[in-house]
Image (cartoon, rainbow, N blue to C red):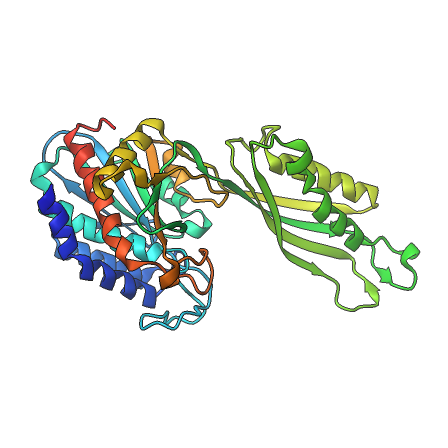
Length: 396
């Protein structure tokens, strides 16, 4: 396969240019219209037929013409509502929107991988489904599943790659089991009785109840959950009152509950269920009421054991050693879990952190950037993984 590695190296400039172009023109979830057009044009110029799905998603299939399994390779498309702080030639030109999570890289890597695999389709047996998915940041994968992305043809296995600034360039993280957290998004209204701050006994203060809730729910992790099952409860939005001398009628809170274990919404082990119980009890103690809405946005991402072993062997081929592979579990969430909960799959974290290049900034930060030298390794992971999987009749 040395000639394939050489071919990928020849495409270094192309994958970087694709990534920079996507970076300059980011679009939010389900609004990736220009992004989708670029992807379609690139694939169609290679001879692929493309299909739109879930409004702005793009799908194409490489059919070897020989019997075999169907492997799905996925890249996400959407950007974030972040104003970029980097001063680079390819800085975002869309005000208040930025590719601060590496999705620009994911699309570029998968497009170039599709090109190389198309050139070498005679080596394959089976089919590859290339999927460019919208709105990963708000669970767009569920929409893709609803519209049949895992069917026609039925997918046997799925693989994804995420650029990761918590890992040094030249290394990857591949781990079996739960590797990314589930996430619930909550919205809460704590309702009391408004009044004058000089006569608090005449009112029912929802601020005190809300403050108590913010503090007390943190005991879910420290007192109610097994320490081997991490939970992070964060309040990201808090609105209360309009004037300093008025006790407000209600307090509005929003936040997230993240957890690194597999628990159905109605399980006793689900932190959201405990969150509701504690919040309602606190409100009752303070003579308040509360309305709580919880959206179960992402389920935990679970890597299949056999697919993980397969991915590790693939990475060893690409990097020349098993020593570059680290274990890793991350409390952040990813809607790739919608696929791996239905078919065997693996999610690979590709390190891009290089302090000298300033690419060790956390994701979702306005200064986030990547080490572009790792892009060809991402392409190679896709290509080598697909070639190996489809020449072994899908045996991971």
